[in-house]
Amino acid sequence: MIILGIDPGYAIVGYGVIDNSRNNAVIDYGVITTPKEDSIAVRLKTIEDGLIYLIEKYKPEVLAIEELFYFKNQKTVIPVAEARGVILLTCQKYIGKIYEYTPLQIKQALTGVGRADKAQVQFMVKTILGLKSIPKPDDAADALAVALCHSQTSPRLNINQV
Image 1: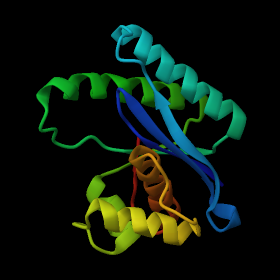
Image 2: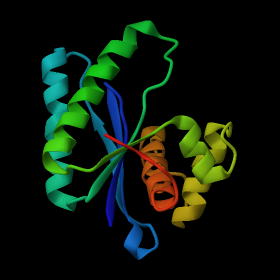
Image 3: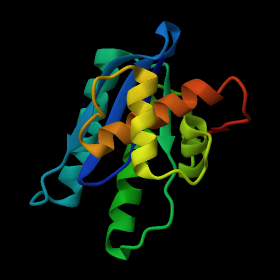
């Protein structure tokens, strides 16, 4: 099964594509970026276009996405929520199966510790996927972590499907 993992954002959307039928083989990872000088509508369209490109290219069977959590910066929470809405709508239209995971669930699935720090999670992404280095930027590594979380937990847990 091909899994598209997404780390939602407004300026940067991380993505990771893995095939769990081939021992979580990495197909691709990276980011969709939106220029800060663009209007919100243009930035959201850029995210949609980037997702459609990825979906058409890799044909994922499911989307695994990180749930939003408390934001310290109140100025960014609304644009990130809007971007997440575009991501969910686009993936519902083109993929259909969407699963959400909290940061705690992702950390638990990859490290065995729900309060693991970012470095521990990134190290486990590198190790589990057999990569030579930790994927960069961090948003891409986070997206791969979400995809891995789905791959490792979906058969065992009662997961949150949208």
